[in-house]
Image 1 (tube, rainbow, N blue to C red):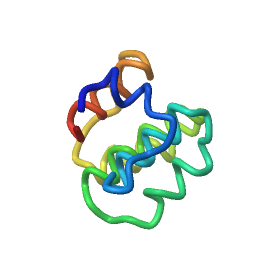
Image 2: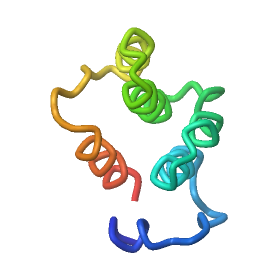
Image 3: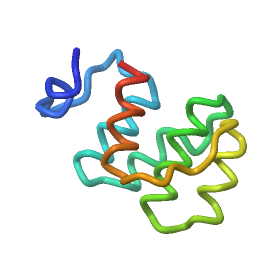
Image 4: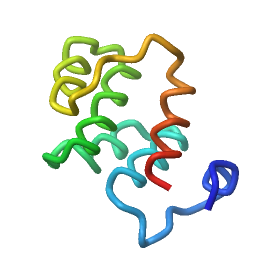
Length: 91
């Protein structure tokens, strides 16, 4: 699956990881459902998606906390680019 195919999905695939589910729900405008997929997880990749979601929400203090947990810095580029880069990592 590529980014364009992912964007066209009307329903998430049952085999999606929680991180992919979070990006799918975020793309479809449901931040709360996206957040619920990763807020209880402890891995670096889930922390990275969690950080993105808080950055999108505008809670930069919380986002920066999750970027640190993920071992990365907050990007200086657009949220759209960050979302696509995360998706490409996960696909």
